[in-house]
Every structure is written in structure tokens, then in C-alpha cells.
Image (cartoon, rainbow, N blue to C red; front, top):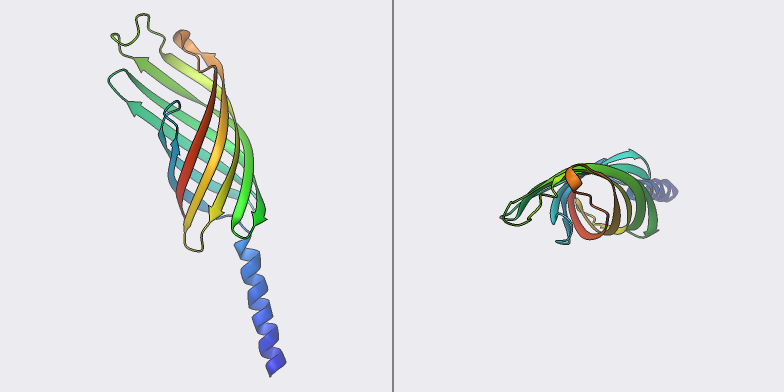
Amino acid sequence: MRIGKLIAMLFLFAATAVSAQEISDHSIGLRLGDSDGFGAEISYQKSLARYHRLEANFGWRDSRDFDAFKLGGLYQWVHKLDGNFNWYYGVGGGLGSVDFDEDYVVDDDGGLFIFAAGDLGIEYNFDFPLLLSLDFRPELGLFGYGGFSNNFDFDIALGIRYQF
């Protein structure tokens, strides 16, 4: 009887360890970047495979000087570091629009822009449904309509997401 209990406990422990190594199916939250980028963005992650996921971000700013939005998407590869720590990298891109106030900029440099992005980060997956991440995202402007181009930007951000 003891051997049966020991085998059952070992099986449960192995099943828990295997499930703990997978990334969550969905997570949603905020990506809080530096003010050089768009600041806070709404962020959604969807697991595609055991260590692959898609991330979509929507940022928007409304101020006296300009109004802007940015929509980005990334394909990410996630690798286990230790315990609940993972590191990840990814590639993607997106588009956005900026509309400057006439008093802020003499000649209107606003317009549509398209960018390519990379991503490198680290995350901690808590035992409850919270995921914290810190990532570094270089972005390269590929196309700017109306004279505006987001040439090159380094965006560092803290991510706070609810997993489900």
C-alpha cells in the first residue's frame, strides 16, 4: 500500500512539474514603457505552443502637444531559466499614427508610420495568476507617411499581466 501511495505522489508531482513549465494560454495587462515610447500600453499574450506565443500591444497618447496611437505584434520564443523565471525573445512590427498640434510643431511632421521591432526580456510567473516582466524592445521605423518616421527607438518596459 505504501508503494502505491508513493507512486501516486510521484506521478502527481511529475504532472505538476510538467504543467508548471508551460506558459499560460492567455494573459492580459499593461506594458508600462518609458515616456520616449507610448508610456502605458494594453498588452495581450496568446500561447501558440509550449514555448511560443504571440503578443499584441495597443498604445495611445492624448496630450496638448499631440495625439497618437500605436499597434504592435510580436512572435516570441520563451525559455525556462530557473524555477518560475523565464527569458524570451521575439520579432514583429506594427503601425501607428501621430497628429501634432499646430502650436507644438511649426511644420506638421505627423502621419502614419510602420515599424519593425525586436524583443528581449525576462519574466517571473507567480504561483497565482500574475506575470511580471521586464523587456527591452528596439524599434526601427520603416515607413513614415507625411514626413513622420519613428527612426530608431529603445523602449524598456515593465509588464504586469493577469494569466488565464
